Amino acid sequence: MHIASRNNFPTAAGLASSASGFAALVASLAALYELPATPSQLSVISRQGSGSACRSLFGGYVAWEMGSAPDGSDSLAVEVAPREHWPDIHALICVVSDDKKGTSSTSGMQRTVETSTLLQHRIAHVVPARMDAIKDAILRRDFTTFARITMQDSNQFHAVALDTDPPIFYLNDVSRAIIAIITEYNRAAGAIKAAYTYDAGPNAVIYAPKENVKEIAELLLRYFPQTEPFPDTFALGVDNQGRLPDGFNEKVAKPFPVASVKGFIHTRVGDGPRKLGDEETLLGSNGLPTFLA
Image (cartoon, rainbow, N blue to C red; front, top):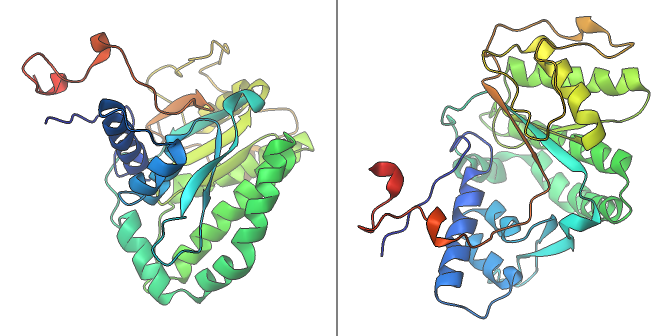
């Protein structure tokens, strides 16, 4: 059997490439063999390759339930809400670095589990309450609460990385500048209009209602100029010269050289794995991946 897998975004750079890959693998094999399995059942398999992969077996908004069984059989993903419940949430991904990380997610987390006392507090006292609160915010389409929890949890995750012995530094100067810019953007607006979050890497994911994305993109382009035009997937009419919103304190960050952010990916809430037609296959007539030809 030949299995071809390809991402359209950087691999091993802290953008959950392993999650997408293992979810695609499990979903593809389940479709090939016509397995009578639900996405939750398949998520138990996919998370053994990458924990985050379990959430990628669904579209929409998804939670990874920890479970309590010693063998992990009830540690699986469940749907919180379908994409149609809250479809106007968009994601603007700032690719700060497409290099492979110095510390992999797996090895980093193993070291954190072994050495971080903050992690134990987080597991016991913080995560359960935040999971309940953010699921409730999603069901109520409460962006303010959703955004606040998202940013708080991202901050604490990276605090745990610093609490690891020796410490793990996933963020860099560009990452921290993006945090400052989004924080000031919300302050100037007098409301939370965007949320930043970082996985185990320097690349930022910014969540916002679609109506705010044009303004956010132009703000980021002011600080992080590009050699190529913004990928205006949703025809927002983004000004590639960049501009500052009213009341924004431009001194919260310095302008960076061209391509300090290597590129932007603009997307929205996804619909989960789907089987493509034969004309879109990654395998050629010889059974080998077409992109290796």
